[in-house]
Image (cartoon, rainbow, N blue to C red; front, side, top):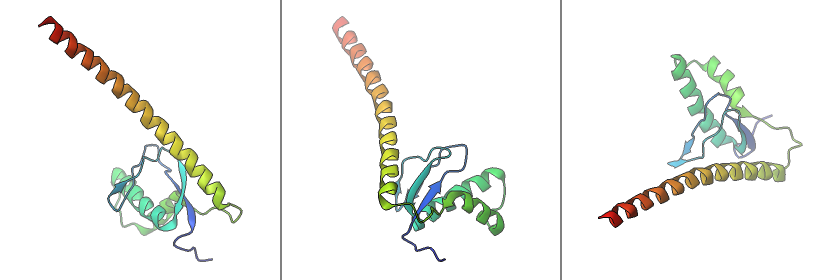
Length: 129
């Protein structure tokens, strides 16, 4: 059965380190190790290509080994069964987005605390002068 280019598939970061995918100059949030995300087939294939290149380069293996590429691609691009509904795909992706936002918020919280400490230190220095 031929897969349609716009059909939803699962992109999986099968590696043990985060992967950052880019498409058309837009950087996507990092895919955590083992993370699975539903997306269009064409986008999953694009991300898989770059993830595979990264892993082959790390191993010092040539990137044009088609047999090995197909094996790794099968780990990256997973085709869900017909029983998966569009609403389930959206729900799963929304949950992933919320996780990503929470991580970003936590990072910014630390940054804000650090900025407040710096501001207090600057005010203390001005008062002493």
